[in-house]
Image (tube, rainbow, N blue to C red; front, top):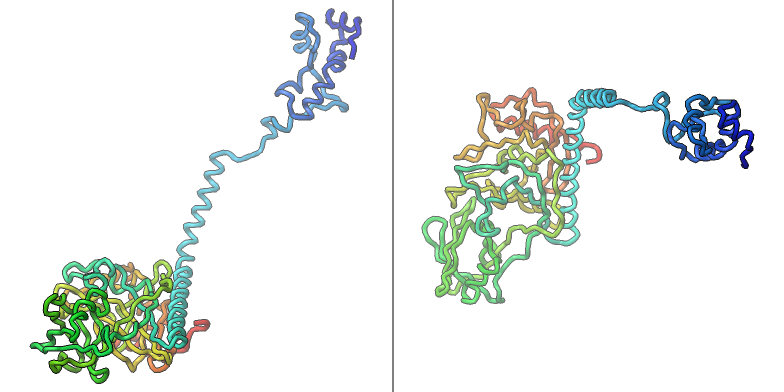
Length: 454
């Protein structure tokens, strides 16, 4: 607005018209800046003096501050609130709140942990049950034997001769070979009967369970070894009938003669007899191999307790000192194979070899901390404490067979039916002898009803 000379003179002489001049000249611009949030801090309480009169501006700011009016109230800027209206928490208050929350969490964890552990064990039992059922269904659908392999924790680092054998030095047992945390689906490859239609095997029996072995066709004498068609734990059958012998070991065939020394084992017969000079038809029943199906990893902190799992006898799944490799324990995996009709075909374990069962197979699903770790270097059984109980890492000293939150998985060999039951109360089952304790607990599982949804 144009300046009135009289008001300019009044401003120069310090008259009372100065505030009116300030509002007239600078009030509109000040209100616009305050509305858009660009008004500098402190400008709300001071008149803007646009006149370029020497000495007038400083005098006016000191003697004529702006007084709020109903028409033009002076309010703090939204972007620059005053200290009186500023809200928030101090660092001390924030630390107090965080400390209280941490204390509440620490008090709640012990009460929630048992429930979480029980849920993980229940989920692990369900996963094992489903994995067994899938293998059984695949055997029925494909018409070929399928099953599962329970891998021992830490056993892979003791692999010998490629994938032909597993062992651990008897004086350096480490890891946890009595705990199974990974399951693989396996299948039984077709039997090997040689590379030709008229293939024959020639056996010259030696003392004990050893024999010199070669094949009638010289080209087969190295082929079976280099191709891996015959491996440790495979079974030999002569003339496609009669008894079978487990191949425990063999040497590299002689390139000139084709001879290889084999070692056999059998629960009811010595090694195979010598064959005629022309040899006999044969059949190698190959042990299961892993399929391409993704392995099953059990939830953290859970495991299949191979110390108490098994059939008859109770300790069937425990490691044992190898008869053919005296410096090593046999820590080969436990394998359960289903036949195409759904029944259990064979069980493979260190103490049983490949066998057929008539009694149920029991798998105990529990906590890893309750699985024994220390093994007797002479027998492969767990080390016992003064009370005759296996030594376990758990602080309370309880084993999985004593923990009522664990589960038994029972497999009926005649039908392949898989059921899951809770571990029964073991207060009335003393630890002496151990076999009676395990048998009684399994007896409760056999008589119990399957858990719902399992």
